[in-house]
Amino acid sequence: MNSAHPRPGRLDGKVAIVTGGGSGFGAGICKKFVAEGAQVVVADLNLQAALDVAAALGAAARGLRVDVGQAADVKTMMEAAEQHFGRIDILVNNAGVTHLPQPLEDVSEDDFDRIVAVNMKAIYLAMREVVPRLKANAPGVRGIRGVVLNMASTAGVSPRPRLAWYNASKGWVITATRANAVELAPSGIRVVALNPVAGETPLLKSFMGQDTPEMRAKFLSTIPIGRFSTPEDLGNAACFLCSDEASMITGVCMEVDGGRCI
Image (cartoon, rainbow, N blue to C red; front, side, top):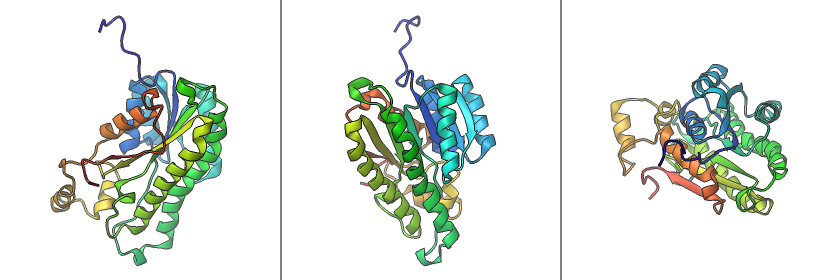
């Protein structure tokens, strides 16, 4: 292709919010989205992490501290995106937490409540704010007004022992994605999800309990392709699902897992 006429980005003109964007999969999604022409609000509980990711991405990104389990923070996040970039087209509900591997009856109530707040309630709060905004957008390609992408997990499809309440929360995300997709399709809003296998992110040590060569080898033995998922893997998959190329896709919870769930 002539360098004077570069390929347009797959997300040109789109404005996205990515929660948990300061590290791991979220940072990978932010990087890919900006590379494909989007403007991105990098939302994270860790303000410095959000600012660092945004700074690396330049003027197309803005870092913001957000506690996704707090209604006031979520509302402020939506308003900040509109004020800074003028609109919202894509919401990526990526922020997530887990508990340490242990018998289900030993998980503390505080840990359980945190999982509910971040993995489940946060999606409810974000949908409550973003859906009216997306419904107000002018219809785009094939009538689509906006896209919501939720970060679920292979844990919601094929649960591992000793992560019971994390598994359950991700099963909830999968069902919420499908339920929201059916309800919002007539309004031109697509809702999709990704089911990654564990990757090189801050949560990896929590999933494994301890980060040792032996534990890594044991974990990797369950993934046919033989490696962990990467932020780039999730960024690429998220970019496709949130692009106009996927205008006929909704309610899908796509494994990005190297064959783990087969």
